Length: 240
Length: 293
Image 1: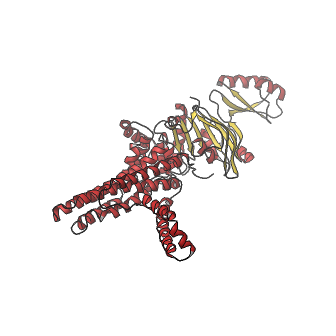
Image 2: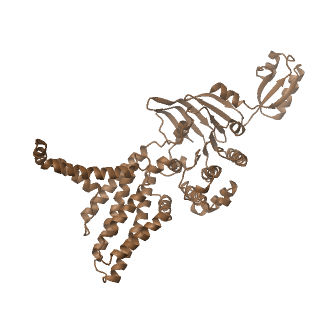
């Protein structure tokens, strides 16, 4: 990990007006809904959105803008650079997550005597792990694409898997031979569900160490693959 | 230090072979210009040397090591034709980041950044965002980030593009300073007059091969052109004295000292040749470019 890169990514994120506005919104939402909502239920979705916004700028966009070429002439290992970019993005999102968490804790202390702390804490830990997975996946998709195709692939995959599950469900329920075949061979269905749960897991309400392990393992696999691809990727610049 | 060395370099994109066996050397303390028409493969060659692209065949070494070795990167500076970076960053913070990435110690960073901004004449704009910089200012900050860590191997891609005359003169001075420091400099440029002024040697790249390697200046020798009065000399006698046959009325000779020039002129005059002009020889890059391109 390169501390200079991590610090730069965090600096660049947190000093933007958009980030400030988002964190302010996050704080207001967390504080406001803590009065009536389920503990730790409102802000994790916003944190996920922030993870998309910050995480999608890794590698692919830098490749297209030509920034990467400048960085690659410096004495920084490509894999270290990629990991540091992801770490910086994760840190920037975590800062916002901690703000949201703190505001909900404050709100609950003010309005409901501090109840639901366990659920809020679980939401914090799950949200932090989910941020790592999102940023890792976006870096992985960015390692072999240009511009913001990483986020496009992410959503296409997410939508594609959901649509596949729905279509398979409809076909399975049909009377034809395909429906019959699918009813007796549920491997395809299970595979799609497994892939979907691994790439886009829904966080449980209570702290779940197995879920955390799965998320972090998948993030690690995505990062290893991203490093491998990025290390061997050609980074042309300009045109003759 | 052995400089930049490429041997039998080949690179294709699909079925299109861009580099067809390039041999290149840039010695320490030497400034080599890379010129050629659009599509000749200059940027591809530069990209291969900087390890942005992987050569299909051939070998690239910088100071005897692989070009992607981090120890080499620490000693490499690169100025891209167009500076692209986070436009929200200020010139100062951008340069600070680049300096830290280049491996300069934290304690030295601010001193170096301030000195470099001052040297490049953009200290007044240090706190402005890069989005507010003109093309010339971006080019200057590009030079700053490339030279701030005093690299031994410098790759410049159109460093004077977008610069005003003061900027061009500044870049020329900077390149000369790097040369004096002993850095190996490879300059990719379309501005022949600029190449002529700063380069010791020029490589003409055309169709993926180096078609000509022209020495403009020699580190230990002075190259002079002596023009003789037409019909006043015997070509064989002049060849014997100068060691080079005259081309038309001109002889190109490499000498080591100015005293040698005087001695040569005296001998030529003694042989009956009318010496009408003696000057440092500059290759006619424009003429050569027209011929090669």
